[in-house]
Image (cartoon, rainbow, N blue to C red; front, side):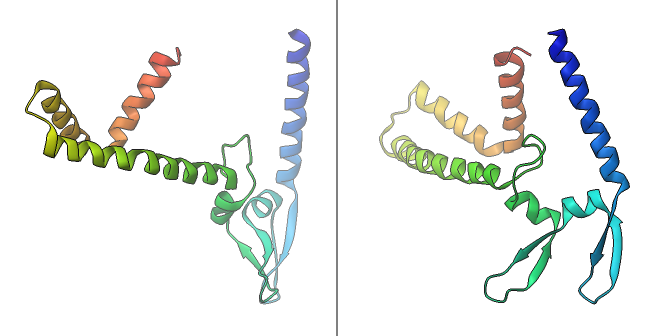
Length: 153
């Protein structure tokens, strides 16, 4: 374990030195109007990329915002990337396909077929509560439940 800790510290020191070196360097950028501008390497490499548009073959710079959504994953998946967005879209699609029919069937059953019983009243109250509380509140309670109670933190 001590050997692994020592290797980790060495790698961490190397990474810190690389970040320090990269922050000190500057890049000269040629602007569209022909002027040159000097900017720090860290800023230029993170916020500007060149892409070619197929039909006109002009090079455009896109901002870091577009890079977050379409770029490769960076910094251990903490700064966005295309596969993270793909996962989000797939989650929304799959859950929509799974939940919408179930919700419609439940609504039809409660309105047309369910007798006035304790369980039907409980379901109606639960649906009213779900509709009346912002989703972020449920998210915070879910986070607390899954992290602190289920996760054992």
